[in-house]
Image 1 (cartoon, rainbow, N blue to C red):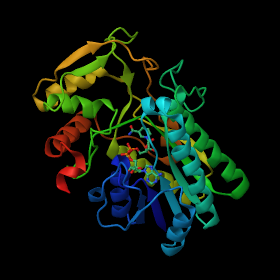
Image 2: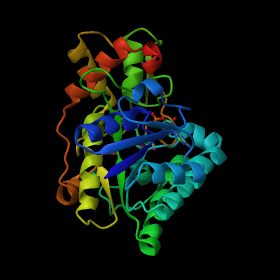
Image 3: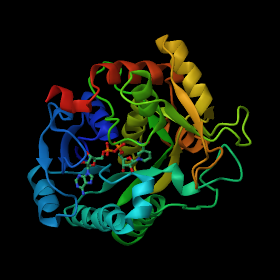
Length: 329
Ligand SMILES: NC(=O)c1ccc[n+]([C@@H]2O[C@H](COP(=O)([O-])OP(=O)(O)OC[C@H]3O[C@@H](n4cnc5c(N)ncnc54)[C@H](O)[C@@H]3O)[C@@H](O)[C@H]2O)c1
């Protein structure tokens, strides 16, 4: 089987691409390099182009005899999606549909999609299960739910079987220090903690310490990016074994507060994280972490790495690559 990984030059995509190769899959990457980096793609063919380019997708699928697709390529900044919704509908929905339809026409039969837990908004009950109401509170979240629905309809009408993985908060870096996130493009907490810790930014802003949580700061579910990468291998294996179209949470099942991240970082690195308390941001839920039971039961996947592993790998990566992969270009 040969897997086309879209967005394979980005943060999660590059780490997943390498894992797929290590597990014996033939892999080809399609990435525009708008937000990814050439240096993040090693040892597999890289096609530079856009997922919305049907001719390119068709040609790539035919040339490389693509059987499976793992689709990461998208924009992911929640704030930007509210300021410029068209940009997100174009890339994340129209682009995704062009890709899905060209792939189906070219005979691709298995599809794994990067969805997000942000489609749950501020859930009533945590850990949140897949049965919870979908409450998209951003254009970004809505584009991910729309793509899940496109995939559900392609399953019904065209027989394209898919797994939509609803990621919680991806964090950390490759354990060998060779691949990671570029904090310049990231809205995620851990890169911002590292940026402040390493002196590349002023104090970290902690948005809100008056939430109804144990220490007053927001609680999320931080999943090590290598555990997340493993979930794609499990999803492809599930589809190859004849599994039906489904969606599932990919998280640890553990809620971690912003203060937990700060204290863990200080303990693991032996350095102080400078931080200030700032007002809450509109739309940030107090507490969102996932119940990963379905992923365990259906895909046989569960997270293995700890918060210490996340912090240690992120610290190693950002210390050595303050400009992301650009440092090694
Ligand atoms: N990082 C997280 O915590 C998180 C959480 C939930 C979901 N996700 C989803 O996971 C996926 C990967 O996230 P990431 O953190 O690796 O992001 P990233 O920005 O590092 O990677 C995305 C990659 O897709 C490429 N890309 C974007 N639009 C493209 C297009 N039209 N054609 C070709 N390539 C294109 C970019 O150049 C980049 O290399 C995204 O779909 C994101 O929405 C991420």
